[in-house]
Image (cartoon, rainbow, N blue to C red; front, side):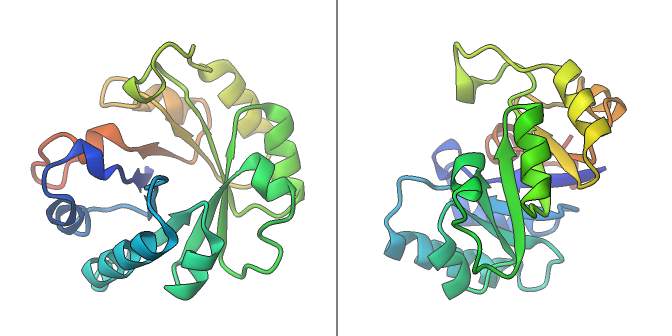
Length: 189
């Protein structure tokens, strides 16, 4: 199973300590998703994380800020479907992940050149309180219609990740369980 980690420094006490723990795990990507930071603060954080990940195979992906991704030579960027479809990544030469919420966005994202798709939220999650989850039916349809990797995000845990994989997802993306909970023996899910 392929796993993408997503950061949220507000969910843990020692952010860089948690990143150091994460660096020893079998993640494919780590998305730096700290939307409230200024360009300068995000760049500083990205550089620090790159130092921590230097001996790891995990690729750092910057959420939403192409300039920071270029400036720190990150492995890639993660964009909303709207930003991606507007052509904001046309000059970017790296991995381009696109967040999607529908089959139409999945098909269009693939056609426009996304490297992978991030679909969600699949299950109920504290991050999207009050917003109904999208579920597995559309995930399964998306996975059957596109050829690029589709990762599922939102409320994924040890009890339901197999259902996500059975729906055809290439992997999962996790934030809360990665950032909040103690990690034992490199076990994420």
